[in-house]
Length: 155
Image (cartoon, rainbow, N blue to C red; front, top):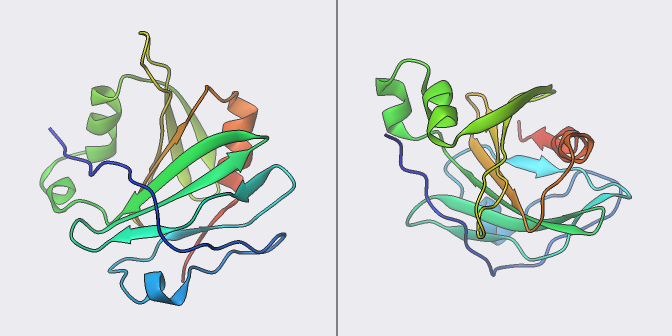
């Protein structure tokens, strides 16, 4: 079983249209991992401040994808992932993933949960950072692909 730190809000504003969005210096200086940055487009743009909780190493921010709010959280790959064979596959099973697609940064797994309070969630599978995205209403596969195409890895 894997533990993923939750999503939170608040922090420092950050947004410049049409290019890779740099993280605010006060956030970037605290990070212990190389996060994904967002490349803003007409349809994908930051809408809320960036927050980093150094106690749990969790970077969070909010994006808009064609007007739909999406909360993104990133953290270093959990240490216990190294102790398990195929950790992303096991995590995907725990999350009841129903669909996958390839992005430029790795495989994206999408959940389509049922229930009155269930929320769709996407997980990016690679060895750079653990990235989860949760919209306030379900996205189409093409909207998910557009969102994940807008992420770039900090070198």
